Image 1 (cartoon, rainbow, N blue to C red):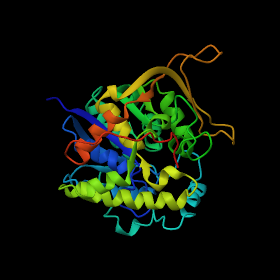
Image 2: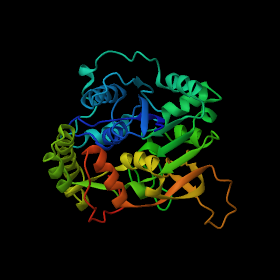
Image 3: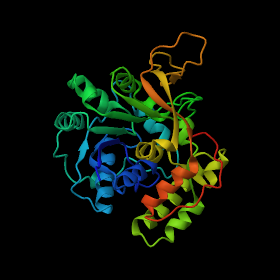
Image 4: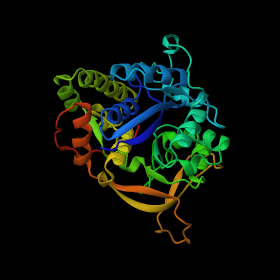
Length: 342
């Protein structure tokens, strides 16, 4: 069986108290799938600081039994945005301790900067590597600045960003976290001419992990699944405190990034449509808004620059997700989660 080469560009927090778990679960889904050859993890500032993201990723690959997998540090700030307001948003919630694990960092990266490492990999395997980008797009933008051939050497960019069928309603009323943190980075990717597939929050907010799922994983014979069950309960506890007016968070959390991995593994999990995608860079009110024009507006549409997800088979996703995370079969969904995100 030919394994598909991927690089995962990410800002993981799984394992840190009060940190989002979906990046880490996406990494685990990829590493546990026999069809993927994960060449390495490139880390970007985002949900957590760069230092914490590197530390979390190294702990995660140890736990998953691949301690030699390259974990490569990248951008510690967005291209332009000041992260102080974003960090303040996280720190305002009691119990949120993301970004406080720097003291446990086990030495600097031995692979240079993530942007340079990605350039080296795609030059070594031109047209063979898919980059699964589930954090802000800063590392990708820097790679494009440093190498004019980078985008065309990548087989495909699969992005967790935006929303193709509605507003994202995430960190702002119209913006999702990855786009909001570094809209200039996302803009560089969208304008690169590379092959782009985008899975937005309108789809990722359809897939959830509940306390019932956590209980099931805690009873699993697989030690990793047991640990994921513990982390899931801790993350839902945090969300319930952080968003007391959001009833969906009393019992569940969204699996945004794992859907990106699953959609790459099996494109049939999502429905797709061609679109011209742009991100707002100027307006203070709408900065980070991603607009995916699928030719449905009254204006003359621009040429498509991406393929965007427009619907999701939730039960197919859950079967794939649990078969890898729990190394067994999965239950059907049985839930219709609201299409929102914290």
